[in-house]
Length: 165
Picture 1 (cartoon, helix red, strand yellow):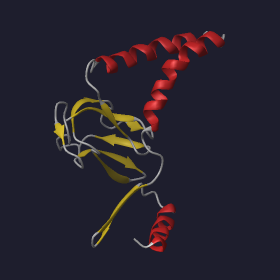
Picture 2 (cartoon, helix red, strand yellow):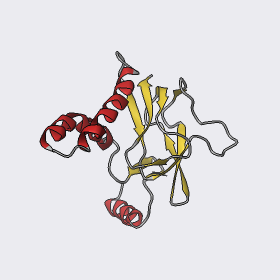
Picture 3 (tube, helix red, strand yellow):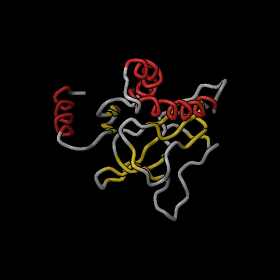
Picture 4 (spheres, helix red, strand yellow):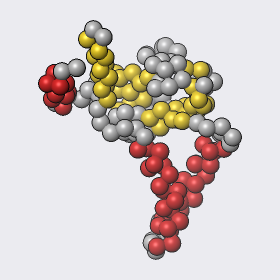
C-alpha cells in the first residue's frame, strides 16, 4: 500500500466520528480501528477491587465504606458465572445507546446460549444519531448480556460476556 495514500485516509478520518473502516483495493485490504482499544476496560474493572481496601483504609469519610461493599458483591456473580472456564467480553467502542435488535419489533441479534461467529452482528450502539453495528471479533458462546436494551453505555463498557468456542 502506498504510504501517502494511507496518510491521506488517516487525515480524512481524523475529522470524522468514524471508528472503524475496512477498505479493499484489489489484493490489498486495510482494516482500521480508530480510538483507544477496548482492552483498557477490564483493567479499569480490576483496579477498583484492588484499590478499594486501600482507599477505605486511607480515607476517613464514611461515604467511602458504604460504596465499597455493593461493588464487591456485584463483581462476585460475574466471576462465579464461569468458575472453571475462561470468558471474554465485548466492549462498547464508544459512548451511545445500546440496542439488542434492529428495531423494537425485531428479535434480538443474539440470545444467551447463542454461538456466534467472528463478524456476526451482536447489537447496535447509537452514537450521534448513527446506528453502529457491533460485531463479534472472535467466535464464542454468549454467556451473559450485561446491558439492558435501550440503556446508555460508556466507552469501553462491557456489553456481553462470552466463552470461547
